[in-house]
Length: 157
Image (cartoon, rainbow, N blue to C red; front, side, top):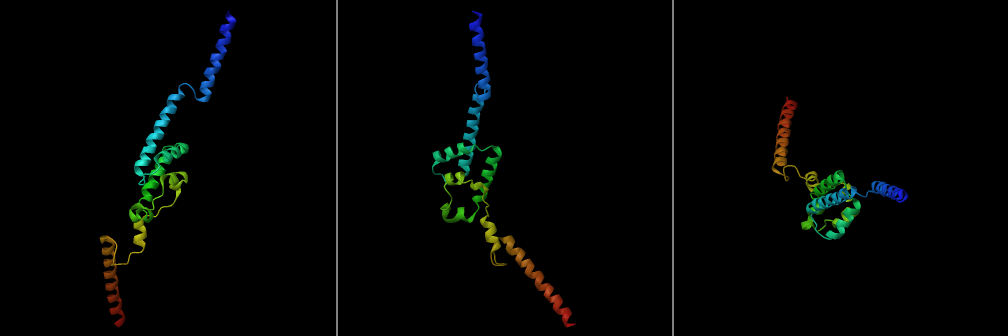
């Protein structure tokens, strides 16, 4: 009768080893924990992304992506940067990409130029921009005018 006990013992040890190698047993809790993390990270993304369409499809793409903490941080920073672009601001967000497209195409790696920077590069001195930009323009004009007076006076003498 000792033989049946011995035959059962190696099977239980092998199945225990198999669980450890394949992620069975205790790791099931960690996999449910990671699912919770994936869910939490997705909800954070979903809250940040301004266009709310096809949530189930976006969630499936998010699960396939399995973003870690650093990638989620990059994605959220990219969403924040994209929100400031002319494309995303134009016509009340009409041209904001579908979130499924944005996730599937890895659009967080795109380069985003804020609309404010685009506007500043085309600002006419003393004629537009914010109050600080206009003030700096006036000061530069005043300095230039006084510099011309000084040089103009010296050249006459």
